[in-house]
Amino acid sequence: MSRKLFIVGTGTDVGKTYVTGLILKKLKESGRRAGYYKAAMSGNERRRDGTLIPGDALHVKNVSGIDQPLEQMCPYIYENAVSPHLASRLEGNPVRLDVVEKGFREVCAACDYVTMEGSGGILCPVCFDEEEIWLEDVIARLHLSCLLVADAGLGTINNVVLTAEYMRSREIPLKGIIFNHFHAGNGMEEDNVRMCEHRTGLKVLACVEEGATDLAMDEETLASLYEL
Image (cartoon, helix red, strand yellow):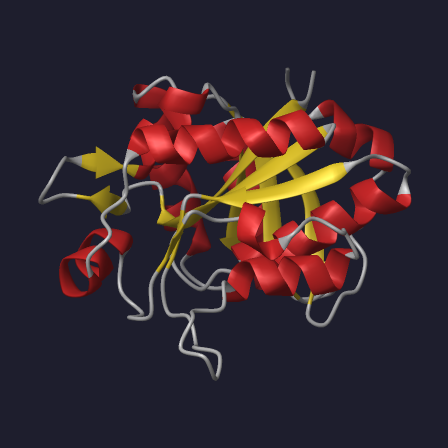
């Protein structure tokens, strides 16, 4: 039976995909069968034949070296760089939870460790017009625990604490925090680590520096975050 973990961000462009790629790379290099999944991706480019390229999935696949087929990684792919609910309003093909769950179960059947990446932050609307679905509904449907990715810079204390408190109020399990865009020796960013740990009661499990090609976390510690 596979072990699972959901990667949620404090918002858009904090580096969830970048960090997720490093996570899967670490799992694969430790000999574990690692898989990736995302319910919906927006802001994707088209191939010459007009089909959309799942950009986040392609990045994770290239960084991690996993051999999982791209078409298995995400059931809903949109061109417009907006939230999935608006992208589907513009392009059609709205997200359905049963389709997301079916694809997720297929990845779980093929892999021992499945990392699912969210879209935007915890309050990202995934579908709205046909059915009201928020990112937290996807997490609840699949019974997942989460790891929070945040930017290490200015404003992160507010973003981390608000996200953690909201998730706690909704009884969404949160395992810890990873800081991205971290600069070792930067006093403000190092203080952000301390303040976020103090205010949330969560541990900052790793700090990812700009251009990092490896996740500075013990492989057994990483694997222990995943739950059946």
